[in-house]
Length: 154
Image 1 (spheres, one colour):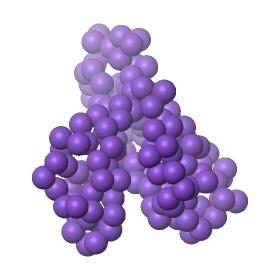
Image 2 (tube, helix red, strand yellow):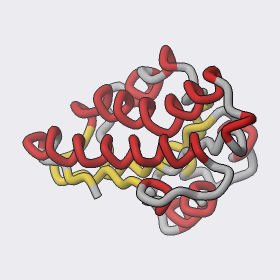
Image 3 (cartoon, one colour):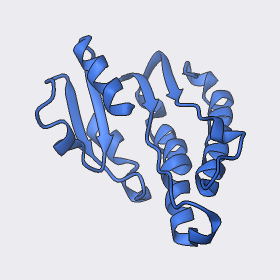
Image 4 (cartoon, one colour):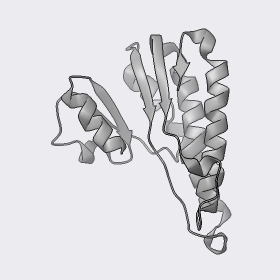
């Protein structure tokens, strides 16, 4: 979904910074409006990489599409996988937003992709559901915390 949205925005003339583990490979042949940045959202030490890349450039909108589903069923769930899913689906969004607060244009929007899994259990997806519920709280917290920064969280 994020890939399709990135291509759509670029085709409409928007400059898009596409972040992901394999962004450079994914967008090698893409529209020149897409600027790929390789970054692993599971690695918290890389969260400042976007800020470093942007410098003083300003952001009009930030869309969060990254999701890691994790293992299926509780019997296949291990602590390390739980940590990975929580970092990618929840912590990355909180701490990347924190890093970028000074880079948003006035009136900028931060957009979260909502999932019903945040409020309703999905069969064989316990960690995914837990992480999406936590992500929903990140959304709620940011909506309150950044409103004084001329930002809207939707």
